[in-house]
Image 1 (cartoon, rainbow over the protein chains, first blue to last red):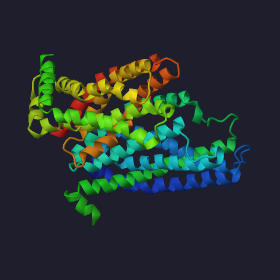
Image 2 (image 1 turned 90 degrees about the horizontal axis):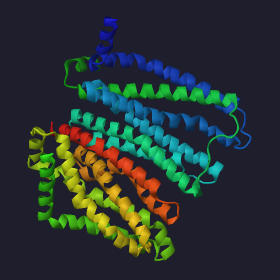
Image 3 (image 1 turned 60 degrees about the horizontal axis):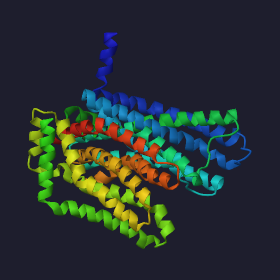
Length: 246
Length: 221
């Protein structure tokens, strides 16, 4: 038991995590490719055409996983940031920093595909719907986190300041979500129900699930690549980096 | 508690010696609000409809304007470090600074708001709801803003960065604050919105000074 614990902490050091991440990245890329091909195949060729929405609904195979990931990555990011703040581990903060751009990308992708989906379904690219609005605010929160870290030169201070912001954001996200939802129900004009009335076909669900897994694997692979770059950048003065880069 | 009162007094004295800064924020509020009728047109029904939102957004921006000053001066002359080293807790001192900041930057907005509301053709009873909502909401803005001010202390491009960090967090205050006034206009009663605004204020009063103090310690390292 104790030896396993020690193994865990061994990989908390950037020096030993760097090669481990390097070995893991090809696996995650491979899984991304497998899930993506399977998910897209089901999404485009197997899943039936929706009775009400026609072919246009197929955009949800990208839209829904992207929305899930955008919310989930913020939680993971806040978790690593909080861990870094509490235990003062450098790698956790680097993980948080590496996840932020992917999360922002997912939030943006979710808004973008949502707009493309909204045009044929609702007849407009944008409605001030509760989910769209809170997704937009989530995107702003990511941008704030990235901007704050970029503005502070000292990486240790950037890590800690970013961690506090991420934690404040995580406390605020449910409050923002519910306030936006309430705001939306109060202003009846723009409300459009996205919830499915009829049950979803099983193949659609499988396609969405596979795409979600592909997005997961992609996010992990990209975050690991980015964290490797951050490790090299921050530890560039140390001896092992000089050997690692050779 | 003595330290708390002393900090509030000290910050108030400093603020009153430089009255123009307070007045500038107040006039900023008035000018932003006056720009909307010029941009949208003088129809009274339309103006009465957008008034709660306009007044709240303007109050948000005016509070933002005062936030960088919250800690910058004390940071520059080293007072902040002395506060961090002081025997009384930094959280308490931060709470004192936020209260003083609200008295200087928030309360005048609350008092000016009904006058501007009259320009937007809001009836008397609605004005009192507006004042009540701002009375609950502006301390909330100061408390949340203090976290952002502490995080961006001494950072490049701090002012703009501060807005990007803090404005998304202001969304619930804006929704419930402006919502209270709109609900009153619609005849639904503002109690629900005001209660939620009060709940948010209590939550922020409990946690924001603590988070601000943690952010200040990071900035002082």
